[in-house]
Amino acid sequence: MLRHKPFAFFWFARGFTTIGYQIQGVAVGWEIYALTGSAFYLGLVGLAQFLPMFLLTLVVGHVADRYDRRIIVRWCQIVEGLAAGALALGSFSGWQSKESILAIVFVAGAARAFEAPTMHALVPILVPAPLIPRAVAWSASAHQTATIIGPAFGGLLYAAGPTAAYGTTGVLFLVGSALIALIQIERTPPEREPVSLRSLFAGISFIRSRPEILGAISLDLFAVLLGGATALLPVYARDILATGPWGLGLLRSAPAAGALAMSVYLARHPLQHRVGKIMFGAVAIFGVATILFAVSTSFVLSLGMLMVLGAADVISVVIRTSLVQMRTPDVMRGRVSAVNSMFIGTSNQLGEFESGVTAALFGVVPAVLIGGIGTVIVVIIWIRLFPQIVRIDSLSG
Image (cartoon, rainbow, N blue to C red; front, side, top):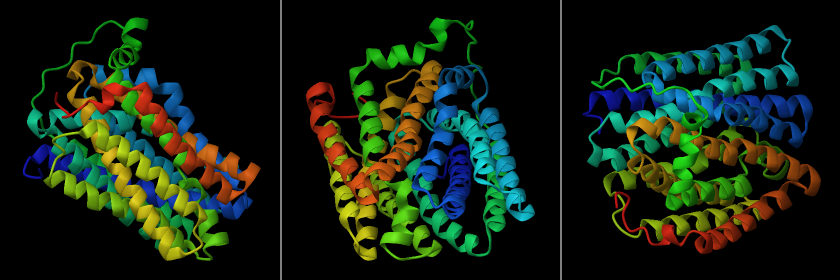
């Protein structure tokens, strides 16, 4: 896949920016927990990233379908780089507070709200149509490789101080923006249909008309919303597993390690048949691994369960993303990808908020345990609600 030069620039850009995003995630999580000692504030970090995505979803999709997606991605990464620079300045100058962190994370979240769906919509025009599933798997491998390197590197950088972590993040975002600028592709300029309520809601209408797409992305929404424990990893690292920033970095890297191994396998051996049943099975395994992680007091066992969790998750991600991109016309991909990204953002960022609130009410271990059990229950319900997914044999059918 890297022989396709536009995709190669995209792949490395996604890798660098994801490393930066993960470094910043470790630094923000550790610093705000050190400032507050509160799991609730860890949840607020997720909420600050989710709100811009939720509020801007309809605008984001329309922009991605009307303008050059490469330019949108470049400017978003520049804004995220500047936000990281502001966090570095705040830590270096000594005026950093929980309020300033949340405000800057909110601004970065607004930029990411435009960047993420536009990046997804960009992939299908970088490679020939038959290679889209492999391109999605390769893109996932870039994301997961970076998610392994980023948190571990972030833990080491944070040991030298938050300024070093945030400063490195800013540089990586700017490098990613420069790589996107190097992408040269021939593409007919999109038709700019008049802005109307119908065009704004076209992505939602399209998804509602395709039960298999609606079921796939809503399954991810509820499964990860309930089963996500990432926001509580600082608590597990310090209070349950008795480790430090380096241990937190390894814990955050573990899901990506499992996901990377699986994404490399899927890039070489694309799923050909029974993809609907495989997706349901993968999400069920995700829930079971979350349950086992919740009750573990062993650092090694916790790492292992997080790796299994990550491997299962990437199977679902590749199937869902390929399904959405291959069954959506290009003129609609920005708006459909924006809605899809809102679902992903809800499951991740709002899931972090849910984890923080649940942990504050019931305790950390019960919160994660309840989430894992809830994920398994969601799979059982979705099999009944969306039998169309069970019947899907191939991604392109």
